[in-house]
Length: 165
Length: 451
Image 1 (tube, chains in turn orange, yellow):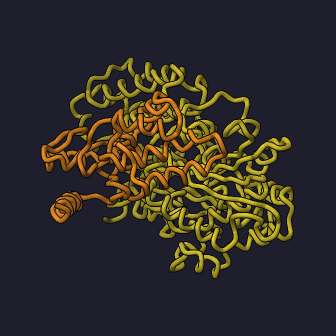
Image 2 (cartoon, rainbow over the protein chains, first blue to last red):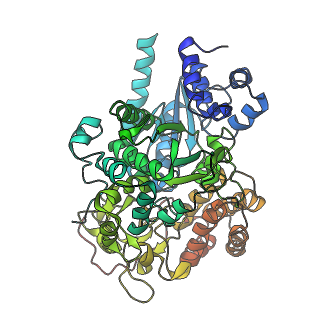
Image 3 (cartoon, rainbow over the protein chains, first blue to last red):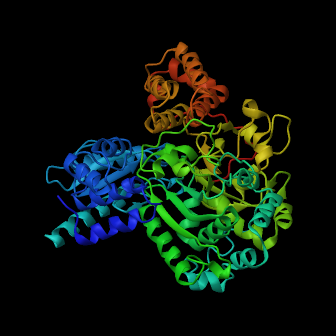
């Protein structure tokens, strides 16, 4: 388990943002890189590798990885639906959207479909309260969700998978 | 139409790019500050402007800057707090997404004032696409000589870096943010020492919110005294309000703090009223942690004065009959909304986001969520309401950072103003589980419009 040359160059760029000797500050961005590179989650092996890159102890990586909600500590599907359920989204029907996704994909919150494509996660406020209900999918927000939009998103993901395979 | 200082150019096509931003007068404040003003003079203008921190606490920015320790040979840092995670608050996202150069410009001038050669934007991890937008804007500013070495021949060097968080509301608290920037868990630090003395990597540090730093641009362009003439009293300048919930036009609005709450909710220029002819029941005007107010106290103060959209008027009456401007996260509830259910979602949020350092917060937020769940789902007892009140009192003021207060205040205000709704839930365990049912507390005098 190692980064590509491009990713290693990126790690060095990130470390250079901080004063000399403060390379631990690069930990959070480098963990994001590791999660992207190693299948969408952080295994113990991946975290140990990050520790070695930053010359810090593995425990320093574990304690950070377990604190922040964006790091996945077990495998997730290729498409991670992170649906916001906090106040303003709730006022605009996030409960119904979550129920619909469960029904449509046949999974509960925290579960992955048997084909490994979709994982459903509920999250707390993502800063899209005026565009609720919403979910995060990869790097982007999908806002003003309706059942029809959820159908389209699922379809879009399936089509993308077919074209990649 | 209120005066716009931050969003004036937001709808100019291509304003996200350097060329258009510059053509529209961008970076004039950097030229003015670097060519005609010393760093101390910049700080002085910010003091004169009366600018209060736009992240929620409302502390005077110029005063905060003047606290920065300046020991010889020790680097100083400016950190932009772009963590924005308070439910109801999405204004900084709008600024960064649509006018990124305004923030970069404000950061350059502020870095000059504070003597920060490395400045960091700490942004919440979920705003991943905005990281790309900011990095593009920083690259453009670099390419055009606004960043780097010896900027405008002043001998001042500055570089701006974006640091992405990874999903933790607590990192919006300045010392937790500093810990996170250092690559650690976002556990708040005990103060003192304050960051102005011992901040990131133990060096003097100022942490300011995105909107605050963007506001430095019009302050320098107009002059602090002119800026202070906009607004009213100690609520100077303009404020971004992110409006959401049951309104016709959710979005981000810039107000000059001279309009009433009623005008903000009902006028077409702003929220455009309540959808489907419903009546207004309540509102949280400053992000989820500030007290919810029922309509009668929202539109008028307890003294009967018109409630205005500014720091002083919103706070009039203290927490007994008033609330706070906070971050400007404005959440509106129509008459069908259930306060108990909403309070439960906020309790869940704060339980989820507690860092776990302090027992009252770690344990108390969990207990509040459990009790609220019982009440909401028909298993509550009348004594639970008093227990809930007691728990929030034991959290408030007893934690290292303000997250404990932020978790306690929504529960306290909900019980204070909507106690009969909690009691109704206990007395009607089956009916109360209906999702969109709450007792109507509206006191809106206007006739119900035809849908």
